Image 1 (cartoon, rainbow, N blue to C red):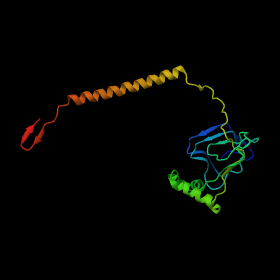
Image 2: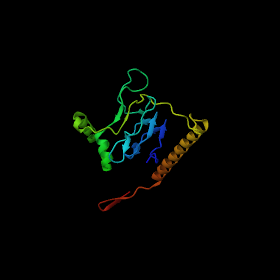
Image 3: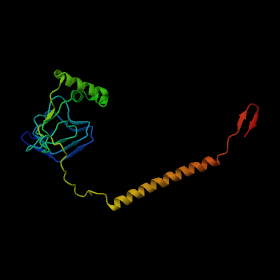
Image 4: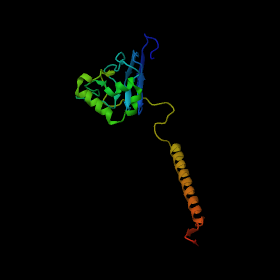
Length: 199
């Protein structure tokens, strides 16, 4: 659980969480965490609660700037880079999945959309939000560069990549040539028709 000390505060700032099944998995008792200017990009589930409950006791924006959510469907009328509507994660199917992990098997099936559409059509079935970002960003923020990691491909990397492609092509050509030679040298098996024998 984060933070371990109930009086402590943990801040997560300018991180990239992309292409995961679940970007963040937290227990419902998690509180006092601060998330702002992070990028949540194309995750199957942006925030997952391991059990029943919500994460509303965490802070999702600082100084009027929240996080970037790739599935945010709001708008920015005043063009200040911050969405005018809050980002709320409330999905009936995700709530059921958090309580019953076996349902994850059907995550990409039409049943998921059907359940969420039914919940929107009948608000009585609409679940409470798991979390709410009051100031979602409409464009991903710039992330700090990582030390020791080149930001652009170098000449050495390009030469190594070309060498590996050439080696793969050579192995492929050698394998097909050997197979072709073996097939040419294999004599045809005799075929027996009736009582006679023909080659």
